[in-house]
Length: 383
Image (cartoon, rainbow, N blue to C red; front, side, top):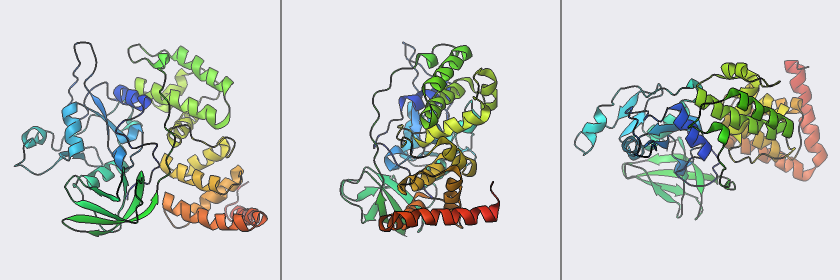
């Protein structure tokens, strides 16, 4: 069930961009209790809260976040509160514990809807939260991601020890398959340590999107044009994605509505969606320069529904060492989608097969790709 995401560092913090986007999406209002408190100096009390916890591998993304007051944030992170897939609030059933009466009032209420509907909490992150905090049972065969390990052990919020077999000491994050569940412990088998990424430097404030000022679409158009003039390929789409995501979080506009406001050739609704997808794929700009064209990534975006699956397919292609064309990318998509759901674990199994071919004979690896390509074209009739 669980995600298998690469994370930059074990931290409770979202990036400054994501925090600001969440403030804008929820208008500085707690998504659970609806309170909007400020300090005497005008600073909002609300905080950005992870749904799939960062220390357990949750990604830095608006769809993995909520804006909560400090009390509700504590309740959400301590196991009092969770969500159903339809965003209804669930409250833990322990009526005897201190704090129950306050949180009980939110039972079965609906979460505050963000101003941009497609940036609301994603079901796959909500499902992880329910598993980790005891609202849904953890069963054998579940896949969970745990972070910040220093001795191969961790524990759940209900106190059960998670015994991770095969996890190295000093592991940052490991992806595990649950093999045994008991009243005292959950036993997992370690599959691999997730790749760590370099931590981004301190981000400079973006005056265009100062949340104290009204958004200017004329200024936005100018900055979008500057990115278009100064960048090409994936870097251009990443920079566009960052701008578009902030603009939509601020304005509440859909991609179609934002495209109508921007007077820049090529900034269509489809390009806004795809640029935001690139921004989600590479949260720390860690794309490979010239390794895969943006057109090839757009082909992956056409097939897959979320950034995690797109990134998994991208990683698979990059690992082959070949710069594939758009058509060859379609071949890899077909390989990955053959009778299985695309996961990072599945990707790495496929990569291993082609890694062995590549080490033995580079020409054989190329021939294998082209053979599959030819078969794919004859079957599906791609032009």
